Length: 429
Image (cartoon, rainbow, N blue to C red; front, side, top):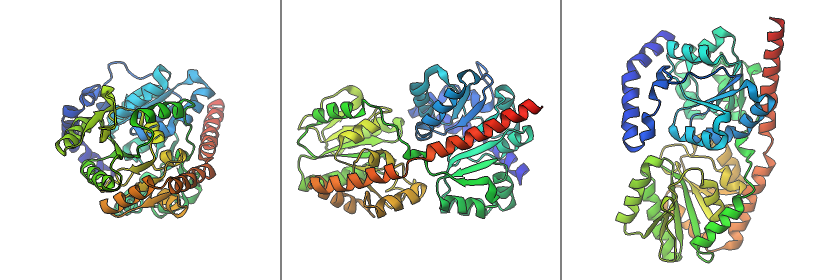
């Protein structure tokens, strides 16, 4: 099965490169440094003590405090972070500048992964969430490099898919030195796939351990004054293809009850910003774009959050938030950022990527889950018209996040333990 996987991946390389080219039509950054994905480097990466793999912006953001801890141990030893997307690379640069090396994730082909490992020579690999690459794991295993799957989550749907591959999945999962699972449900799914129980620890989700900048609320207050302090405002965060139309439809229903309401629309992917702007204007809405510095007076119906890294500020300035990827079959996105800010959260039915967090937050009355656009519009209009209910839901969400903090400390303890073991092994060698 491993040979078949590798053969199929070799055959898929032209399609993968064409996909990068296709995505670069709307996001030219996908053309930059594309050879790195095949192990070709204009400037080869330097050796680093730890390799952290974080797919995109969300994983980079979540792993930020962990990376800071690694740098604090011994900055000279170095950390290299790989991402799959240019937006993840850009966020990493914003956070760490030159303190952290960046490379694009190498395709999971033996010679490509082998070249990367030969150059970097990490002592530990940290894979954030659910990136599982069989050839990378096999190569690290042969070199004696422990790999930790950190902040690991595994939806029931993904687990069923992996289970169909039988022994291949068990062999691949068994190469993780440790799986630090977000919840007991995630841990149970990994065990069912053949991972030995002693290699799994439930550490919780590091996304609870949010560290909000001291200036965030000040910037949010300035933003809110620009929108209008007396008008109701809701944010549609991290929306996907096919979801923006639904947001505009919900906004139209909200405005039947609250004519001054403002929608702050924040698409997940920057290559869609222009299309979403055109969609809103075509639908007859008066639009202002954050990237253009446009004002948002009373005449503005929709404010497009078309910048990177500002979603927390936009959430903090709003009265309520819808978290996207949940009215289309994407699986949802992180609810905790809004909840930590005390902003009431509503999501759709498609939340399989955050099923446990959503279930607990809804059960604790810190969020509401709806089935469709009509339900979304109804909940938003109720909240935007009732400050006391908004405050109650928002405070429940904030307390939920506070109660569940601590996963970062538990994960750091696991990482430090593995690095100490590697130090001891090196001394004995």
